[in-house]
Amino acid sequence: MTDPHRNTYDPLTSVPAGLRAFTGRDAFGLWFSLGIGLLVLQAGSLLTPGLSLGAALAAIVVGSAIGVLLLAATSVIGADTGLASMANLRPALGIRGAAVPTVLNGLQLVGWGAFEIIVMRDVADMLTRQTFGASNAVIWTLAFGALATALAVIGPLSFVRRFLRRYGLPLLLVAGAWLTWNLLATVDFPALFAKPGTGVLGFGTAVDLVVAMPLSWLPLIADYTRFGNSPRAMFRGTALGYFLANVWFYALGATYALASGGSGEGMLIAALAMAGGGVALLFIIIDETDNVFADVHSAAVSAATLVRLPVRTLAVVFGAICTALALFVPFASYETFLLLIGSLFASLFGVMLVDHFHVRRRHIDAAALTLRDGPYWFAGGFNPLGIAAWLLGVASFHAITSLAPWIGATVPALVIAATSYLLLVSILGVPRPSPAR
Image (cartoon, rainbow, N blue to C red; front, side, top):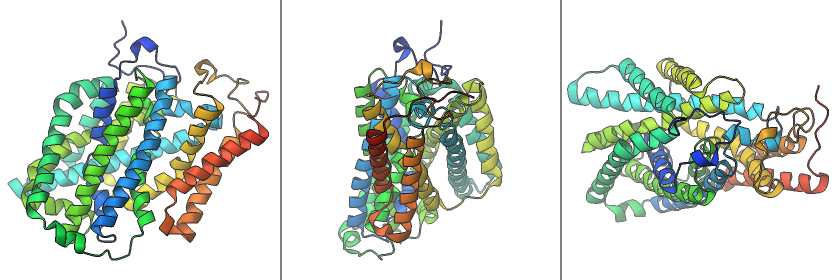
């Protein structure tokens, strides 16, 4: 009998209804956990002192609400179709057209995975150096990379129920509670709220930075909600779990950074450790493995739509690549990385949401996803309307970033791409498949 706790399903084949065992509670636990982490704390530290604390908190709530609603809406697509994320792009972009974002998704997931391992390694190494006077970044890198790869191999259902529920969430709640209590007990909040922002960061840009975090999961979420037992449960679990976590840890990062002098994300972790938060940071590091698990697992699932190899085999390959990059590639600009992801994928999923909910009426013919001359072949394997709308969204993102950065570019670009695709389809109709060559 097939083990429903192992992800052995073809990403281009819909998961059978009888094996969709992922509940709303599972979705809440997964996305609450993925919404908490060291990178979220560091991203929050980017908001202050450029903004005042009050403005930063407002940007966090607004950006989280926007990003989470889009993320939860995308979760419904996976539950509707039972297909992986990159498979769900084929009706919007065409069978061949979807290969482009699939490759880009693999690249960005490898980057995310390497970044996560680097952050975990650096913090763990700092803690052992402060506590025991010993340092070995290579061992930490290999250990975190191996753990995340092993979790990616066992699959999402086993990960959530065997690792996350038993160990991850309890550790997260203890760590988050300690960080919050320490902040409330030691910080003069009236004084912090009275500090004006420096003005180097606009409110729109701050919202963009917050939105970018939940939107970075758009290309992955259907890889998990395809196992969902109902679209409604996936929407509710995802929205509630990620919103609570994102607001909580963005706010902690922004407040701790301002209280410690606003010295940036690198000094934030050191300040937390010096303030006695070493144990809390250690708990967060252990749970941070879930982020690398998600990156490695989804990179493998995405690649499996192009290369006919088992997902578990590809997970080992991508886990090794992420670990190798973490060993040899230095940590780059995190803020730039977030904004780049927003420019590529926010617009793309604007097109995908319109295609699924309006054009397809929430139904995809999974059996036709690999058929030449089928309904998703369009013009030589490409849907020109979907690709044009996507590129227009990306171009508008960079135009807004260059000409009017203070309004924020991610959400306008997504709306422009979605509206463009809606208009093109309404005027020209969905292209019919052309003869395969």
